[in-house]
Image (tube, rainbow, N blue to C red; front, side):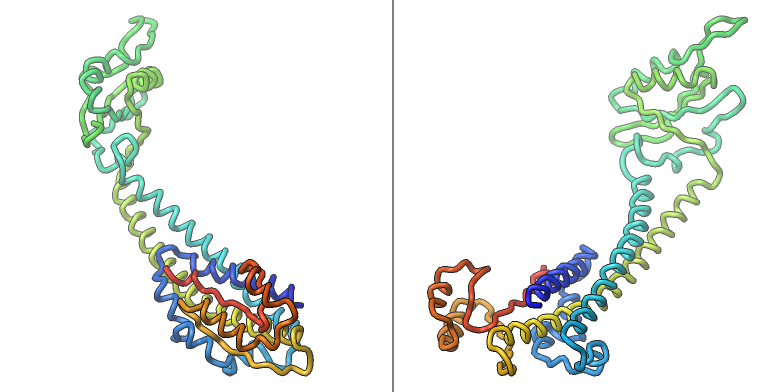
Length: 328
């Protein structure tokens, strides 16, 4: 059972750490102190005899039953965390995609704010093409765009597919200028090909009345939904963090009992205590090893001195509680 408890405890610690990292920008100090409004060390000193704890983990249950209860509790929390994170990330992703439309240069950002109804021409034979032209290529574009896109007719032979003088600058930034050009539909594909060959970015765009307002409303809606979802996830994470932490400490207490019985036998006769060494860990270790040296097995002194830290064997049961995930 000892090895099983170690394995289960490791899993609980991973889920607990996952709750800490669920939201990268959550106030970690806030998460640190909100465990039933008590600072960590104060909580650990308390005896877990509250009515809520006794109802959740009945003292008459066997050790296996208690561990299974804890395991079920944290497993449910882990599954719920995955679902809530998936929902939140979905909203956050949609918001990011919507925000990117309003950011960046004219070759990528939404051009809806710059196009008015009068700028867009669309008929059976004519269509409007929007071009993001690099600043350094504006002169070449204005000198050559009317020659892009020719097509054949039965009566007139080859004719120019661009409406002369239809280029109109709609917007400009530090890198690009946005132009609209009116072309014949029969020459549209060729015009776009020639434009791309001329280092011009063709923006696919169809004008719709009210599109700009709809985009602004959608952005505002997603920001509100993201803020609400984040708040709910923060509150749920804080509550679940407390529950998982308490379950984890219960598991540590069970492990202390099991390890002590395995070490010292029955009937149980031992004293569990909590020690916070701080920066004096080496001094505390030496004091404990000296105080309880009588319990050491032959040859244990050499193991204490020479063994690696992760495999050292002390004359007393030693179970660490690491909570570095809670600090920045």
